[in-house]
Amino acid sequence: MLYKWNTRLAEQKESSLVQHVLLEYDYDHLHSTVIPSYWDNEIRRALFQAGIHFDPDSVESFGSDSYSEHSAAGFNVTCISFEMRYDLLFLKDILDKHSVNFHVRTLSEIPVPLRVSTVTYRMKLPKRKDRLELSAFPEQMLNEKEWNFTPRTDAIRNPCPINLRNAVQKLSIRGDDLLIIMGPEFTDPRSIFRFLFRIPHEESLSQIPERIGFTYENRGVFDLAMTRGSRDAFLKYKEAKTIWYNSDFDDMTAYISSESCVRDLKKFIQRDYTMPPPYHYRVAKNFSDRKRDIYSWKGSFKYLMKLIVFVLRRYDHIFSDGLYSFRTSRSGKDFLMKIREQKDINQYYVVKLDVSNYVASIVPELLFEQLSMIWKDDPAFLDLLKYLLFRRECIEKNGQTVSCETGGLGGFPIANLFMNIYLMELDEYFYPKAVLYARYSDDIIIFARSRKEAEEYLSHLLAVLEQKKLSTNTQKTCLIEPGKEVEILGCKLINGKMDISDHAKKKIKRKIRKHANYLLQQKKKKGSTDIECARRMIQYCNRIFFGQAGNNALTWSKWIFPVITDTSSLKEIDHYVQDAIRYVTCGSMAKKRFRITYNDLQKLGYKSIVNAYYHFKRL
View 1 (cartoon, rainbow, N blue to C red):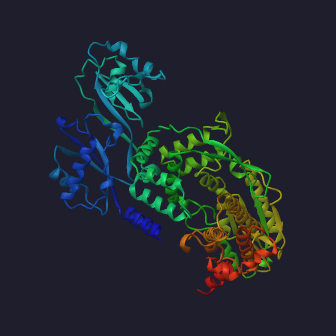
View 2 (cartoon, rainbow, N blue to C red; view 1 turned 45 degrees about the vertical axis):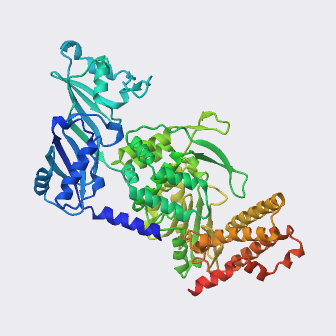
View 3 (cartoon, one colour; view 1 turned 120 degrees about the horizontal axis):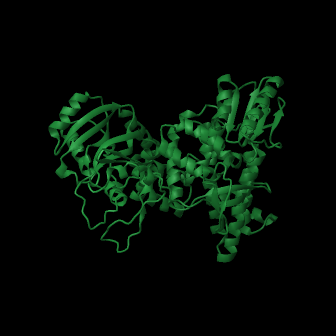
């Protein structure tokens, strides 16, 4: 509940910013060596003194971060987001009246906040250089792949050379001036000037670079992830999902709350990708001999991507209502409730389709075309997605880096988003037809009123999958006649009643059995008492079914209880849990286990799922 409240506040704050302005300002040459964050504070002070309602975090002049603490003459820029609309002439007068050592150059209204994508510097050419010789100089230098330059620093005795070439997008000569256009990796232009003209550190430069132009791009996913509100909301969300303590959560909290997280996001904006390849694992599927490919990063990059995926929840609106996987606005439970409300559901034909090895079969080239349409206005984020999809190398179990086809990066946090996007075409086709249609990642189900209609739907599904170079799982793809049992998203529908599916029962029983065997092994090793083992088993089952302290909204019971109408499977699972508790207590499935009565289990904290279900129904 706390997470929802904080998210709502963040949304209210975002929606309350009704005007965005791009401010260009000049400052005195004597003050140009002050880092740009000083001017941010001056702009904030001027607006606060005038009583203007604005977002202080939106004020961020070019070079305010620690990566660009170089001095330069010329003008600077920042965006400002206001909580109410102001006349631009009024704002200019206010800023000029309260400004210290700077004055407004231009004020212009923009539809969305912007960030600097390139900056152009002007510097005077060395007088001793021949102008005719210099005419071909820019093109020659830009053709070189590396500009290795050793910076001068007193802190490091033997500093490592840095490659300045990546920072420069264009060089040109205009009269007696050299124009340097620098891209997302901003570097001190004086270092570039020294490198180009081989000027040693001992020789001082008599000029200061002058900024003469900027280009801009929309602020996007990374900017939103950097805000304190987004990071706090993410940690509260993860805390609510954590059923039991995990040391990894503490590491993630420390990193996301730190300035290191912000610095790493700024590196992404600058297209500085220093993360290693993902680790590749082969993990067995439930109740199957087949294995699936899992790709995973370790450490801070893993946490950073989880934060970015959380921020991407704001793009939930791009999906059709027929998609139910990994959504903020709906879940598979909503579709099951919709089916329950359909009175003549037994008269429908059902088309079921399962995509075989979905995430690994995603074609990166086809997926990237879709991503380019969605994030065309956020090139920094789009470039990271391109880097991840087309890197095509991984670290195997033996530590060796090898080439591989990673598909949609299965197992990685952003893979769920990729799976939702890749088959968006299907969702958008069926939803306007008012068809009972649902897609949960690679599982698709459609209800049709006639066999002909069902066959047409199946034909269209297969055609789209062929275009996407996907194949079906023949064992799970079928056309079901009216009145027969249908498995849907962990439940089964038969004779108008909804119950837990056989596959879902097997999964939950397997989880309980696995933990019971683990506790029995621990009992033999550590000499735990029967009562201690029983309590641990009961605590484990209660956490699975009811959540921590019984109020976790993401638990099994709160998902299942509103959907099912038949308690047969609940009773079966209830008896299985009781047997598992008795098993870890006496170490046997013989009749002697029944010496532990139902009342004994209740005294130890056992909660009956069936009783909880009926209690839920009475509320």
